[in-house]
Length: 111
Length: 115
Image (cartoon, rainbow over all chains, first blue to last red; front, side, top):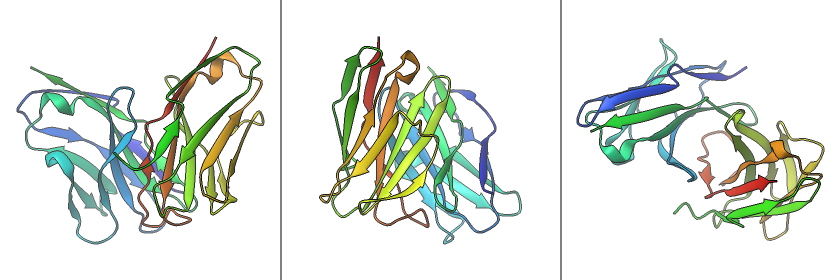
């Protein structure tokens, strides 16, 4: 069965420093993987997706993620955090019939 | 703007009542997914419809039901409402019956408050 684990429920960074949000997955086949961002009281917005093409995926707003099959990881990174990045981030893996969501990581950006 | 619309934006009602939430998928998308997001349960998948037929079921209560109409919009009906049903309800749409490589596009959500 497929599953996804977001390793940190909260992450705090200072503005201008790098962001790392960690996601591990489990799947018996090659899944598709997504990162979504949710700002308070808003819908989920797609940041990027991996579908077995390039292992380094570039997304919107300077985010990128690297698919590492050997480590079953799909961590989200950004070189320099901005105040507007403060939000909740969800890692998603495709299952047979549904999308499986991680529990979310709340990113706080300190001025 | 994802192209997925949801109405109403906010809904306040009393325990025991029934409400209907509406979702219109992106143009060309055939699947609609419903999710419930609450502080204690996180994001929970409820149900998926593909081209008018139920495709997959998640943690949907018996008091809840959904359908997808010929024009592909979907409605989620919640009845005998309880305080614990207060949550954000999202719908998402995809092109195919999913998941595969399809991207889900989410609507802005309906915030339901049960008093």
